[in-house]
Amino acid sequence: MDTASIARLGIDDLAACLDLAADRRWPRARRKWSFLLTVGEGFGLREQQDLAGSVILSRFGPRLAWIGMMLVASRWNRRGLGRLLMRHAMDTARADTVALHATAEGVPLYEKLGFRVTGPVHTHRGRFACSRPGTGRTRPFTYADLDAVRALDAEVTGVDRGELLTGYLRFAGHMRVLESAGVITGYAGSWRDGDLVVIGPVLAADLSDAADLIAAVASTVDGDVRLDTEHPELAEWATAHGITPWFETTCMVHGQDLPGDRSRLFTPVMQALG
Figure 1 (tube, rainbow, N blue to C red):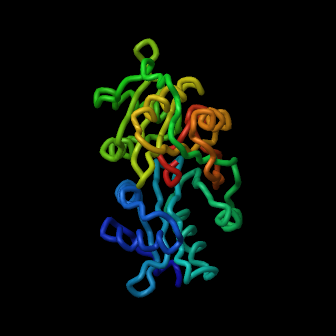
Figure 2 (figure 1 turned 180 degrees about the vertical axis):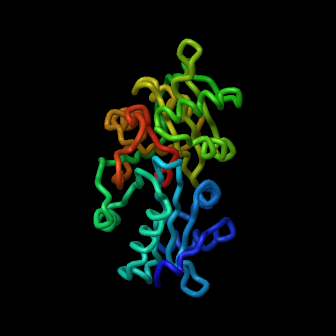
């Protein structure tokens, strides 16, 4: 196969994407794939009618692009398909910074493509345990908050993710904001992924505000929640509140450093999006 075999994937390819994920022992996360194929650009390699590989590129202007869901069918291992898909996504991105979250198996490939490690991403899972959920400092998000949330998100991430946030409002299960002197200084959302509720994104001025937002969202969940974070302090807080370590991935970038103020980005929307 070569790059000429790469084609766009759309929502009509959802079933094939789910089959590809199952082949690699990934969950058949229908809602997640549907969302990503809608807000991002999917690309795939086909072997006759079967999907042999996939990647999803999410672009946020000229400063940043995020790559996720890079998968190659097990029968095509070590045939260079992953490199082809990554090269295509990187060339299409046309961004100062291209970023991704890598599994241990993917790190060597990404390093050969010029990506560098910025640090670990701690994934925690568990039932939230706290007798004081902290909802007093936060309130439910309303559509009247959208402009303020979008401005805050752009300040923290360094890019305009307005279209993503608009789509996320339809995808999310619960959203809350935190105000200080009438100004929104943090927000958090959650979405369901199978039997888990993922809490993300979480943007806040500091760890205390992030913890209050997470507690307010997690206290509404009857079951396990998941947190992905690059902040060791938040990982420690999560462990102390019943959301314990599950696995780790690695954040990697190509080109310039990640824009914005990463100290205030406590969890991503999802690992495939940043």
